[in-house]
Image (spheres, rainbow, N blue to C red):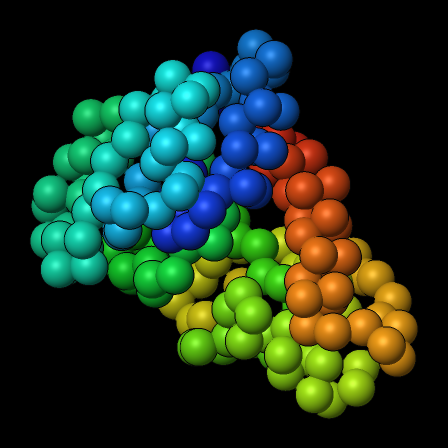
Length: 188
């Protein structure tokens, strides 16, 4: 059975979608949810589903031995970023080559890179008067939002849409596609 760790910094709606989809899959399980913020809503969602949680503050990530020991002790096979707002250290990428996946709320390479997350992305898309936005699911490498693209899905933007409207439409795509792609990738 494949063991997944979900890393998230925010409310955790994508994490919860993945937890719910994986629950009935006999070939994998969400083993833990990790956050860098003890007040993150994702931790309560994980508790509600009986998933063990762990908080690693930013400074702990520099201790590769502690982090790698944690992942090894929990027999983690695959890592899912679900709104995780911290750069993944190179040692973890090297330990899990092509086994860390992320979702970005835009059609990369547009609106990607450091500082481009959440409403920052949606406001930029709105300001540029784009006709479409969407999601990009990609593998994680050592550069922000530059890993191999696995899937992109787009949605139209209407002239009257606000950044919040764009956010809602993109979130619907995230919930529709991310759990499916995670299950597919983690199955190998």
